[in-house]
Amino acid sequence: MISIQYKDSETNARTGILSLPHGDVEIPAFMPVGTNGTVKAIKHNSVDDMGYKLILANTYHLYLRPGMEVMENAGGLHKFSGWKHNILTDSGGFQVFSLAPFRKIREEGVRFRSHIDGAYHVFTPEKVVEIQQIIGSDIQMVLDVCTPPDISHKEALEALNLTTNWARRARKRWDKRNEGYEGLLFGIIQGNFYEDLRKQSAEEILALDTPGIAIGGLSVGEPPEMFRDYLHYTAQFLPEDKPRYVMGIGTPDYMLEAVEAGIDMFDCVYPTRIARNGTCFTKDGLIALKNQRFGMDNLPIDPECDCPVCKQYSRSYLRHLFKAKEILGPMLVTEHNLHFLYRFMAEIRLSIREDRFKAFKRDFMKRYNKEI
Image 1 (cartoon, helix red, strand yellow):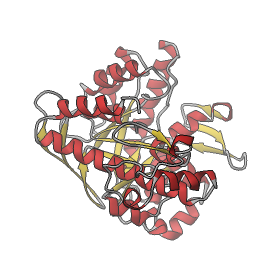
Image 2: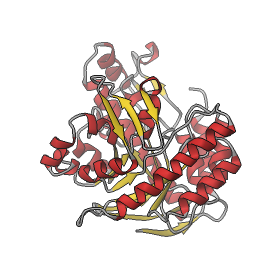
Image 3: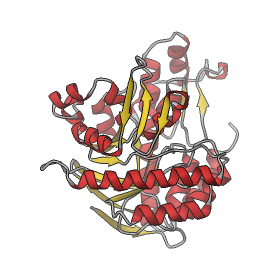
């Protein structure tokens, strides 16, 4: 399933191929988020043309709308949406976590109220596997308990024990998956910000021998240095022969840190979310197009970028679209941001193949963080 081709000599960075039911994916890889079966403000074929072969959708949202009856009738999300490559689906655990006032976590599973109509639903580990099978996920995640960074050791241990028990039940249900369904199950390491619990969670999840492993419970509001420390601490326990995924990171600094730790995959809504507000990635850092100083700026978003947006449109014109509230503005900046990150990942992979990742990381961040 995973073939590691090159390893950096100074760090744990690695590159290779992840083989999935809907084709191969070069790693390390960023996954654009298509929560409702679409990456917001951009067509699937544009995402495909950039080179992306793996996107993310969300079990919680698709379960509520359009619902599993519609999804099953369509033959799964690939046919329903017209996306012909791979799809990873989040278990919905983070979305349920964010609905704190409207959910109740029990040993059986989690009972929650829909943010759409207030109706009550129950997610069990088994049901979440079944839902993702109907969706046709190429990678599906186990249901886990996501926790904030300020809880006690006792609370973190309780959440960890529940996550492990749920993962065991998910694994048993996945083992009985329908014939013909080839989607892979990934376990999720939790443990909050306690080293002993991180190690315990890693040992327990790895014992389940799922095809891939995710590190959860990071980038949930903790300081950057805490993210970095617990990322590297947890990553040391991950096996070499399985894909490694850190959930919910999408900024260059966090992605570079993850690659250095040996992580293969990551996702985040951040690049497309900021695009809808007119904020763009450039080699020289973020720029906010709504700022008045771009009103007469005839340069492209990033003069070094070769995406269709930068080839055709100026910062001045794009700023006009946002000020005039034209829908084309968010669409074009979304395209640029995703193109920027795809090229960024390609440059990372090349630096690993040429055994110069550490220098690439240093030079990129030195330029990216400078004031413009």
